[in-house]
Image 1: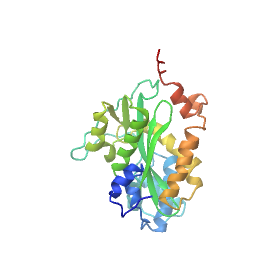
Image 2: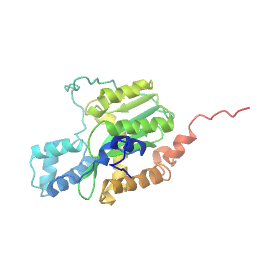
Image 3: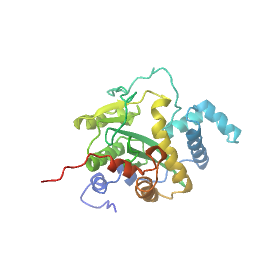
Image 4: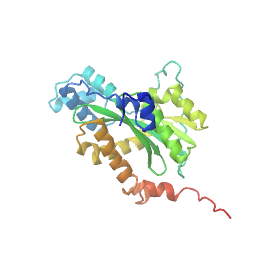
Amino acid sequence: MINKEHRLSIGRQARLLSLSRGSVYYLPRPVPAADLAVMNRIDKLHLEYPFAGSRMMRDFLVRENFDVGRLHVATLMKRMGIEAIYRRPNTSKPAPGHKIYPYLLRKLPITRPNQVWAMDISYIPMARGFVYLAAVVDWFSRKVLAWKLSITLDTAFCLEAVEEALAKYGKPEIFNTDQGSQFTSVAFTDLLKSHDIAISMDGKGAWRDNVFVERLWRTIKYEEVYLRAYASVSEARASLGRYIDGFYNTRRPHSSLGRLTPDEAYFNALPAIPMAA
């Protein structure tokens, strides 16, 4: 699909094919099998106990006969892009040039599609190695509007997902994320501001703000990811596409949506387009 001898750059070819540029350069990750086993178990434990920091996570793992120390657990959690979710004073400072925006959703009734979009990134285990999944979701309908895979926690694949969602579905009034460096970057916030979208960010580590996206990741992982052992990025992309686009959005009913699918909840609630006279 990607021709490295073509006159177009690899990055340009990836954009034309709607692929994350990072995935084009995929090589098997030199991660020891023992670390992958620990990371995959951490991933599942984090879904069950999102409040667990590296110390508690270490204790869980040791009780399951993993030979691992707290600092190593902390290193692996950082590499996976996960942290404990709990309320704490916000003593951290944004990276140089990165601005933290206020949380705009407190007590805000979410009553219609395209009122609020949310975005997050999650670790996705494969048979050997792992990738990261970024998804843009309509808060009202739970519809996954766009998603991308990458082998790195960079900003580029997040931008690609947002640009795809904007091209397909217009724009939201508010865009909510956590305070990850990908989302506080100038490139990311400038993209939203260029479309006159209000920017909202979760409180650092606040459990309240993460419940919605944590529920999405739990669904995707238990119903798709943990049932597979993706052999490659392309296989992961194809299988996740079948699940997200072919099942989750279109066929899976949600109790919180009155048993509607995300597509039904999204499209049924969109304002009717007046017919030409």
